[in-house]
Image (tube, rainbow, N blue to C red; front, side, top):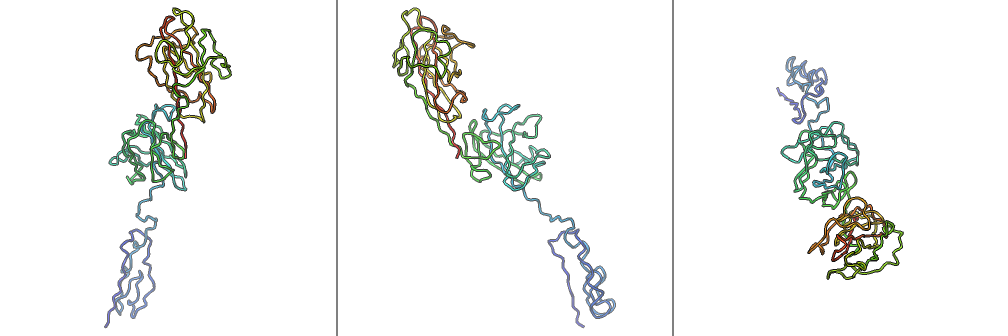
Length: 395
């Protein structure tokens, strides 16, 4: 007699705990009572009443795919990247309660919102869960999320439990099982310099002179323009009269004033133009006035004045005070003197001053300077000024 053996094998990749796929296919199709397939789909191995395989020889009820749909594969990390960061914020980004916080920006490059709650962030790949993002922190599709690296004792939802190192390091976003979502290693960065993807979500990175926190990244170029050079000509009034405050304003008419190239002054070899101190060398004019128009295009991001003065000065831009050097606080009168007398090499030094860019207009701007002596018998006076502005261009 020929015995045929049918073997039914389970797939080795199928997990246990599925639906009952071993249902009987019939009451017995072979010769003899037991030769057909059994109630649980077991194949018969011979003829005769008892030659078929028993009720339990079929595939088991748990041999199917998992009924709960669990394939055993970990979920795909979301389409979220670290898009930009600044580890040495020196005032380019202000915060209501945090002094000059480091910051980084997350960007969702996908088409669906991502719940970041429970995900990890860290600046140490071996200690991935330094910070756990709070529940309910949603990053919309295409959106940007700004986070502050503060390591404060009490953290708000947008603050991280670690700082960023300006000398360069790595920082990452991880699933709550440690699976990396994004890990970024950045170089040493200077103050207010940002490390950013050159467009949102791109693989290329660049150092930017300014950040774009919370908004789309762009390539930013920086240009420094000297809009007023040292040694430029100035209109000046050395008549020894009190001009009050009107002379500072843009609509003041200085066409009757004298004009000469800087440095202006008297008593030293430095001056290109000599101004008068009055008729009495023992009672010299306490104040001499200077004015000049200059052009500033657009709105600069920074502005700097280099000032050489002997002994003291106030610089006004479009009628607003921009710089005060070596004079007391409060209102200054025509006959007020400098706090200290300037002497020796200090008389020739140019000192740098940052200027509030909001004082400038796009186009013509009037710079007015009052130079004060230290005493009525001071032997010399000197003045020169240059102005440079920094502009940012976005590509």
